[in-house]
Length: 165
Length: 284
Image (cartoon, rainbow over all chains, first blue to last red; front, top):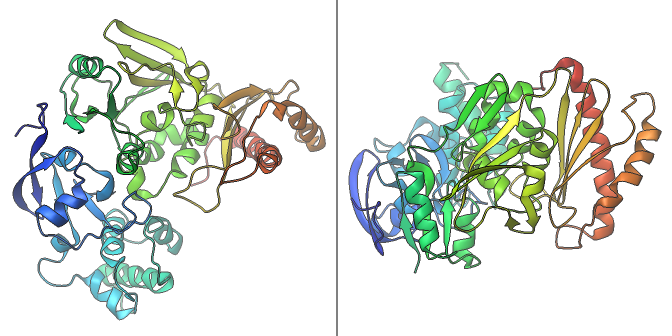
């Protein structure tokens, strides 16, 4: 790989949803654009493209980040998980609870909401409502489905703990 | 056309910056830089990614004398660090106001503090905690107090061929409390309309850091010691001292509004900081 060199096109080798991928991109190409346009992973959405809306949230080495604010070249040698990677074996329990709660309206923000919520639950299996709202505060929903989104995350946490609803 | 470079040593990074003659930009979290790239407000010839440099200071080192923060420490890591939470509560509060969880997973303290924004969220708290900055150039390294570092909007003592490699924070004296208060149009993912950090020591000495009320962040102290029984006296002292603020009117608020609000936030920050002198711990 050549991320150490001064070339106009960067060859970037990264792991995406468990598979090794190599792409050649201009230096200014964001990880988000590379995922969508070079790798066909359109689950992560392009919306504000400046880190305000969270529609492009992915996990980079296990941490939630805005893919629109990461250069593809920066991801060289790193591991990316998109919403497609979370649900490779069908809908996750979290996604099912989004549906059960009626949290999905137009749906555009949901991949980002799901990735952010998954990141929260991996670090904090029993989040309070306040912690859920804080964790998702960077994910905007123009349908304003926030109450049901919070309920979906609460229901997932309860389900993972084995609580009976 | 912007190029991307990921050096593995500080020397290589400094050489690359120098070779571009001012056209290069250092990259850590990218949460400011990528927005600028997208809007073409910043058009660097070269982006120098500092995250793979082996010989930069480690993200955080805790010593008896204080802490040392390297360029790659993120806001999220800073705010979760137990020693930072115990000794520098204003800085934790400031870091937690930055963006969102995803932003804080990328944004670096050094990047936020050192890009020269008068509204940078972490700077008032760093000023209150008497931070100093290490700047590396090919000629060597120098250390300057943070309050001398800012020259004007987006202008600092760090030249285009230099790098900020460290922020040092001395250990606060026993019984020192600090707090941060910020006014924004909405919570999170917005720039500060006004921000204030306050520090109060055991003897009541008050130090303030002010953001977004002038061309550069300001540090100032009150003449009289803090007296919890005399809040009207505190208000009068603030009215007088905060005349040093020279805010402008912009989309986030008018000059008059900022003048009024900096007094309110300063009072709140001082009262919160004074309360922390005894408890030591910040609220979870």
